[in-house]
Length: 286
Image (cartoon, rainbow, N blue to C red):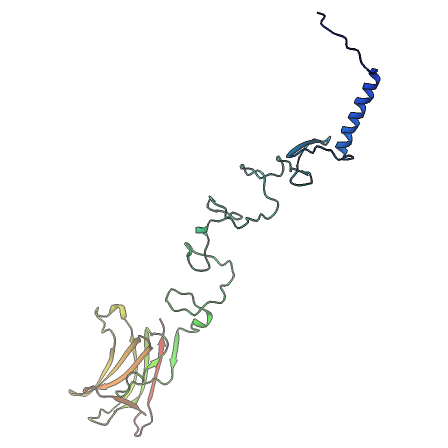
């Protein structure tokens, strides 16, 4: 049997050439979009643009070009960055490393919550800016507002209230703070409050008293403090007493008491009548 068998053609070779050319033209027309193909490809398609291959995809009725994965796709190596904001669709990014430099994202436990659920763990610099809209402080560790800071650590009281026996809780000097040091200026006559077993003396004194709360019992008398005892005789005296107030009412109480615990009041120096004497104080906050 011969290796090649000649099969006669029904048409000349030239007609086959023309037929192949027509088929080729038809394929080119499909590429140019001139004729809608009856069988449409699905999925992805590669197109040679002449400048390179372009991958196409068909999400619907239109073919779209895939971005070049070498240039625009995010990769695990981090060599390609986002070029626009990325919505998370309500989901969270998990497995984040702890942020340690400007521009880093931070994890939940690294952020200070405005609810106060997570506290600062180090000193915070305000960078020359202010904390505004602060509430009034109520604890010794609270931040204070400008109006809460005293303009002076010293207050001068021109007329000190002297505590009476009849109203010991109401006749006090309410300062809003417990003073640490008081300098008293007394220029008056001391007269028994109810004229029973009267104590009479004139005083022109400047006295100093300090509040040693932490040192009470260590050589200091504690609180109240008997600043001075004025004596007219062995059984006739008047104690000048200062009590530092640390409870709901903060300030100090000044009282004069005779040997029977009865009240003694300051009157005008070396004069009769009910005009009050001079009882002034310089009060130190710290």
